[in-house]
Amino acid sequence: MINACGILQVRTPGRGLLEITDQVAGWLRQHPLQSGLLTAFCRHTSASLLIQENAAREVRSDLETFFESLAPEDPRRYAHDDEGPDDMPAHLRTALTGVHLSIPIMEGRLALGTWQGIYLFEHRRRPHQREIALHVLGE
Amino acid sequence: MINACGILQVRTPGRGLLEITDQVAGWLRQHPLQSGLLTAFCRHTSASLLIQENAAREVRSDLETFFESLAPEDPRRYAHDDEGPDDMPAHLRTALTGVHLSIPIMEGRLALGTWQGIYLFEHRRRPHQREIALHVLGE
Amino acid sequence: MINACGILQVRTPGRGLLEITDQVAGWLRQHPLQSGLLTAFCRHTSASLLIQENAAREVRSDLETFFESLAPEDPRRYAHDDEGPDDMPAHLRTALTGVHLSIPIMEGRLALGTWQGIYLFEHRRRPHQREIALHVLGE
Image (cartoon, rainbow over all chains, first blue to last red; front, side):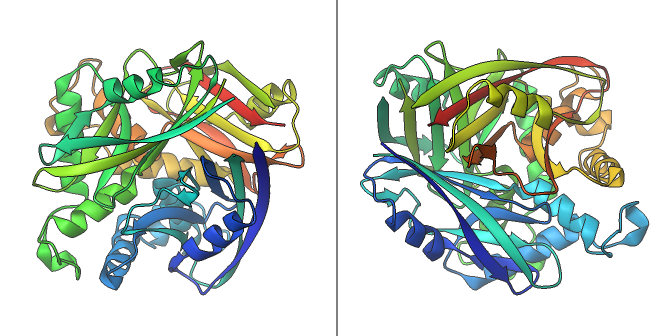
């Protein structure tokens, strides 16, 4: 039984969806197994993890626009603004999308569908260094 | 230690919540264990997985109405419409509800509460064939 | 390999975010392991689990206000009201935030970030007794 964990360091260029499927799959190749479970966990409260379509670029810009509209930057709405007007909306968008993903591994590969990619969703305006904890269990 | 995976094929009748608790529990009976973890993963970007109330039918219709209102069909809002006006809202509703579920197994059974069921949430208008990857680990 | 499960009983004081990080970490200390995966699962359809900021109190009140506004109490909107006007909004807020969390364990500790706490999000107005199923796997 393989039971391994590690940290993926990701530098985001600021707000938006950044695909990390290749980095996750690359880490997994260091722990080869036929069948098991991969878990990714974002160690932050203003960035989240999302499985989304990896083909049309417009899907990602529409997603970004949607969450900017659903939890808008608007200082009048929030009591919390310690780190600026994009601080509280970032927490809300993180709560709506979540910080963890669990993906089965089948026949030695992540069981992602054809059109699915793994994305780090940066909710702060400026670039950030983000840590994704990874864990795999199986054989 | 049992470490098994499989694919559940589900035909949806179009938009709405479809209970799949029995199919998941049926698959699990092929891999009997006392204690462990079940993970279900929907291999699509326009359908999601949800734990919700399995009693009152109105809960499900209210849920469907709510998500139709939160991420509405409205071509003016979205750049992406490759597969029609229900395409981008389907991606948004999937992002809001998620594609994976992990449920502990205790005393040989899924640790669902009395009123909880597992639902596949189809977000496209038309019927679709959906694949749910299942994984179980435990003993 | 450690493969253990249990139930955490939590009494909520009514609507709002209640931190349970210490209770979860306390349970985990009964099953010490260096590397593995912890899963928490809320056995209800009107309360959810959330990873959120554990520092500024305003983040939590802003989160509560946001979800009250996103899925408001408004009897005209919902067909389902078996348990009162806070019943259906509670289901919707649960669907938006989710009932399960999976967190890697690294070097004997939950891989939470510095500012992350585990919260039980009670969506009903009145106090409730809630059950969180916990599962850990690793060694």
